[in-house]
Image 1 (cartoon, rainbow, N blue to C red):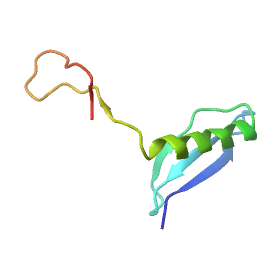
Image 2 (tube, one colour; image 1 turned 180 degrees about the vertical axis):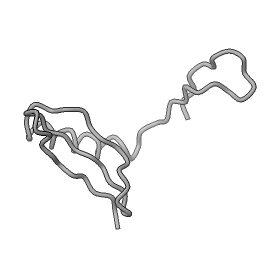
Image 3 (tube, rainbow, N blue to C red; image 1 turned 60 degrees about the horizontal axis):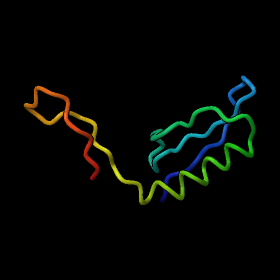
Image 4 (cartoon, helix red, strand yellow; image 1 turned 90 degrees about the vertical axis):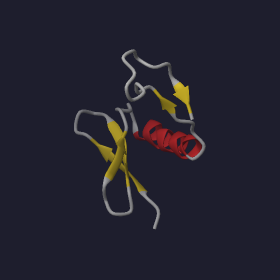
Length: 73
């Protein structure tokens, strides 16, 4: 079973969504959107980009006393 997006209204006149793993674990939560249409568009963009998105590693290398340069993997 695939994960699922949940669209919600937060009570502050904003909409948002969360992505849940098949076991129900929340994997990601969006920022606020002004309306439902914008939140649904945000889901569409995440669906389009997430599968092929690169990872930019901003973490320092083990044993490195300086902050490492960003690495894209």
